[in-house]
Image (tube, rainbow, N blue to C red; front, side, top):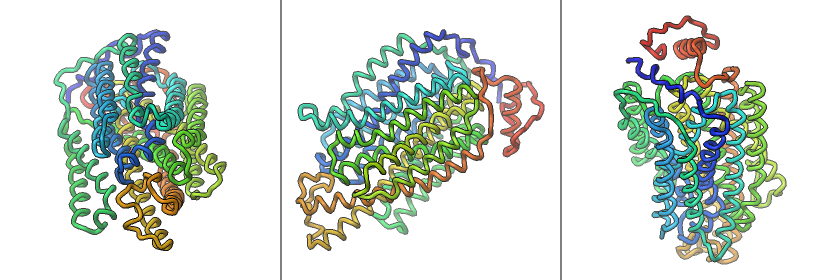
Length: 549
């Protein structure tokens, strides 16, 4: 392999923007990130009404969210790799345009199937935004200073996650707007961000010769993940665990992903560079991000349904009831970000945050349809604090351990696996919820002397207004009681994130944008001798190999 990537690092790429220019560009980046996050959270409280009016099922309810996460997951590493090869600003603008078009199509959907397809297209833009915003910030701001800016990032995330459910609830409850505006509302904001970034963002392109995009690897990753998540959604419902469908889909997913690994190992420009993601810090951060992704997406999706279907609150009230979790994200991300910038230490905050996250899920794992709202709020607050202390800081830990030329691929890899965790989490938890709800509704209807097959006369169970009062009560109790079970599963998975955080290296964040010669040598040796904490081998500078593998 030649050293073409080492020499192509212009001065502009190492942060020539002034503080004022950085803040101006950051405002546009944060605005577009706000739009991407709102696109997910705005539907969290509106989905019960949306799927009810479209006469959709619980599986379709889950897939309205999963479709976006799936395409965002599959495309995130592609966007990240493109950011290492082409103009970052133009890529961000392209992502915004895709997002706007997808949002408009979603708002015009006439049935649940069309809505799922539109959300899948929208996810392509979301995948670009969630990867490229962090890549652009990393190209402007050194890791040590980035802790403070990550506080701003956390604040915007919290505002989107708090404001999104509230906005979605208000839109759905406003008769002259209707649920379609949950998708239309992001269009003007995205256009404003597009114009703002055109005027303020200045990131020079790194020119590289013989660029090759790993389309085969990207396609295999996307196909493997898609097949796996489709199987998760339908197993034990449409077909049994031990069936030819399971064998075909799981076997096919494993084969596709193994082929992807083989392709990535040999590709000149891999989408997910194995040399980076197998490094200790990156690998452990990825494991932690899987748990955080499940927390972030699973909590937002199913808490809104719990409050509306399980407890009988309106969409607006459901949005208000989720404030404790979002407040936890806001406060912990800002406070932790400032403390990290002051101390240069990131591991303690990730460890504490992952433990708090598990504690919050454990509390939510005990709720049912009659649990005190104070207790539910306390559990949500802990989950929010855990997410705020871990999500961005896991990315920061990875960015601190790789050279500037690899920041795009490294950041996108973590975002990829966090989004994958969210997609798997929503799919798995949604499938478990659907099974338990169906079983409990069937049991309770039988006990009440109501024929299970004819109770709803083809009406969706989520369209409560069309159901008799007796059936409504049974459906609410089923959803309320089943929700606690899926959060208990989240707590168990979160323990894996705690273990990963404990094994992270204790490092001090660097103050420069790129690795220095000594840091580069330590990183190279550490990647060659996996598991040695303090590798101090001498480094050759002949440019023959970027790693010891």
